Length: 295
Image (tube, rainbow, N blue to C red; front, side, top):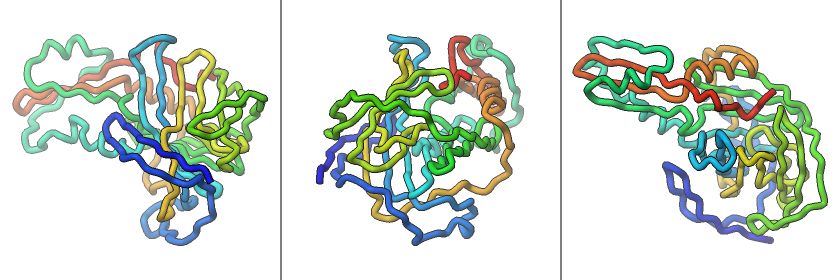
């Protein structure tokens, strides 16, 4: 049985190298505690995959709009795709670092206020919303239905009936991560993608909203060279990990409504502190920024 040895680097966390056998998704029911823990129970994950994701504004642009290491926890029917480091980044948000006993006034500058903000004196803090994504995707590989959860100026829940993806499997082959892989192509919501999957790893899942190939998807990129997902780690979980949607007061929306909320939120938040006076300013998204889904 083939093994992989990978040294994984995260932008904010360094994970040690590890060696794991080829993994197979099993059905695990032990440890089901969803209702007790305040979750909508979905499945038990027995496999974890790490992907490095990049998105550029334009081809050959060295300044990335996003660069994240994402985690995919895979169960027998469901999977959970998310940024494992996001809770730490949220805890380090400028607003969460403020001492509430110091605050006397709070002012909010609306619109593209970055230039106005630079005229202030005092402590300056900035949170880049694209330094890690708050989006979580719960994927049902049987029905093709996805549930998106996003903390974008509120807690949003979006049901996305993707359906079964219409892949075109080609005869092209390549060796990736020491696995023999095969190429497949698809046009998905306005972009043309090519994906490489490993038949030796019998898991019909992959990064983001991709799934449905006869093997784990280890690499995906779009035809323009703007978007890429690449597997950088794979492991069996010694203890099955529960996949569940936390209970909460969600704002129900569709995909387009959620994109509108994210665009209105902007690219970053800047916080200025002068004594007990706090000024919050937002920076708008670049006009050239495009979401992954164009239609």
